[in-house]
Image 1 (cartoon, rainbow, N blue to C red):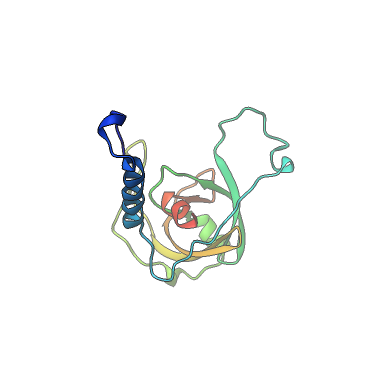
Image 2: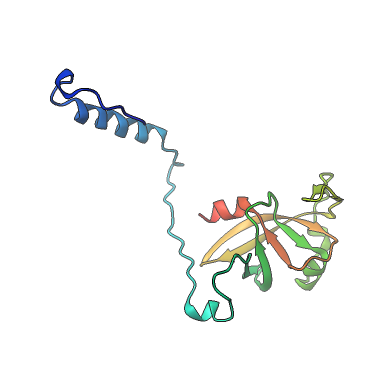
Length: 160
């Protein structure tokens, strides 16, 4: 809420207190919380040891390891510009998951270079980070990227 600064002699003594109460009431009305929902604090921190080989300053992408379907997967790119979670066919095979878990999809992926990639399908897998597990949908693609998984902005927001 944006407030102007009226002339003091034109306003009653408790004018600002009334405006503050109204702003607080509007803020409360605008809050959205599911019934019974209590946000769990999730803290991810990096120690000196984590950055010992990183030249500073840097603008490198965030690449981490995650527990996916109870297996540690390295080289996971956190990509806030990506709208989907992506798993490569090679990584899918390494996790030794059953192919009958893949649900077919007709929605192609379109990359930054406008090239279309036809996905094999979609699979739901558990993802654990910072002692918090979520079920996430992954688009299975047959490409050979630098990373095993790409985690998109939806996952980042759900992890809070």
